[in-house]
Image (cartoon, rainbow, N blue to C red; front, side):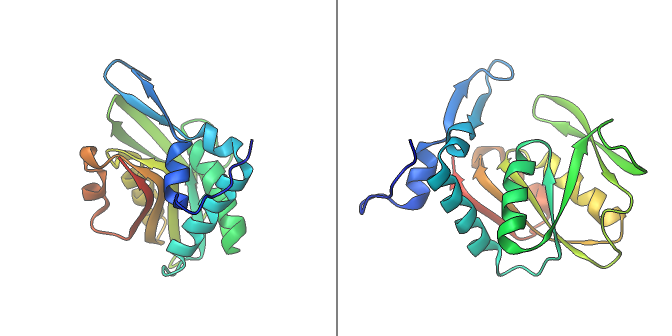
Length: 182
């Protein structure tokens, strides 16, 4: 059932209450922060996107790049809210057209992401969006892809930040917006 904000709870507290902690996923020792209960709550997910749009309004950007897969959900909604175009950054082998790739290290393995070569114009400005900032590896690799196409990264936006993993440090002091911190 959708949430209604009480007078004593902030929107951030309500959002945090809808983020589920899953122990030992995807491997032992990892606590996975699952946003699917938040997505199910139409009122609260709308508020989450409204808050993110408000916070990133100070950045100058032409496009939003969403990182597969939950970054597609958050990024698409934010793209609609801000009136900006959406660019998918996908896992290897998922894009059908000419693309560039970037390998990077996750906290629990290696991964490769890709972007279409014609996704952005040289000189354009891009906001990178995902659900969660952990080690910063995926966001940093996404920024490398954007920059290699001649565009500029205006900033990053996440629902959740796992501060103890210090991912923000990998983002070179760029603008980073988060709603919830663990």
